[in-house]
Amino acid sequence: MKHIGDIELPAHTGQGGFDHAAIHRGRGRLYVAHTANDALDVIDTRSGGYVRSISGLRGVAGALVDEGQDLVFTSNRGESSVGIFSPLSEDDVTKVTVGVRPNGLAYDPDRRLLLSANIGDAGAQQPPSVTLVDVRSRRHLSTTPMPGRTRWTVFDPEQRVFFVNIADPSQIVVIDPDTPAAVARTLEVPARGPHGLELDSTGHRLLCACDEGKLVSLDFRSGEVLGILDLSGAPDVVFLNHALRHLYVAIGDPGVIDVIDIAAWKTREVVPTERGAHTLAHDEGVPVRKPQKARSGAREKDPDTLALEKRVSDALGLAVSVNHRDPGGTVQISYRNLEQLDEVMRRLAKGG
Image 1 (tube, rainbow, N blue to C red):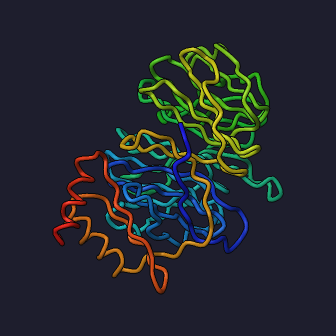
Image 2: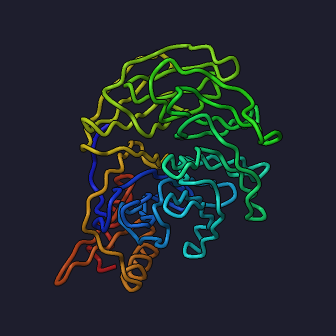
């Protein structure tokens, strides 16, 4: 894995920086929660450029995509709501009220249930909780108190349950949508501060990255601890590449991605990014892993520039990014092989 470039995003206008990111591979869109700007930044993964920001999402912290139903979800911590929209109409966001300060998100596509893991507010005597939302009807179903601060969450389609990380006490709780009023089971985690969470369905285990700088593997049925591995620091978001059997762990300090071979249960490599880089997204169409540490200062592309990009892209049959900065700018053409590059050069030589 190697660093191949940076994408500039809009400058921060408030506190909070960036948080979770999610990718829609079919549409070539990466959605990054820009918490400081109350917005979701949209990146074109094919051209590698910033497209626009979806505003009006106060304190947006989580982002989740379900490609099968062509939906994007957000957790809006500043207004205790989740957002639901289609990539075809990104400004048409439906908001549903959930528990206080939502963060982690997970989705059951068969029953069309969205789970929001809510941090709560100790000062206002609002406990941590999880909320289930019926996505079909866009309505709140239930909110259940949790034993401690919630972190990330995943859905297991085999058992048809949600797993939710709890920072303190260190555990993973199991939520069964058929009996949502109470915790179904609890798995104890032998490391402080469960944070990032992934499901390895092939190995029947959960992969839990903890603030203590440990990666813990647990059997997702019995809760048996299968292994503990040292990380380079306190982790945040994790992502499992099922094909490679590699787990990518974003670590903001010192600013690296730990690449874990989960089959051999060892660290394969440590890749430098930037200090504070703590969220990940993976585009299976590109054979590299991209850390989403944003740089500030990008401007939203105007409709004329987007139309020009589409016209040139349609003419070449390739992804094209136009970045205009008066009085000039750059045009980036992405190709996958030398044959495509030869065709571009042939057209340029002949004037089209």
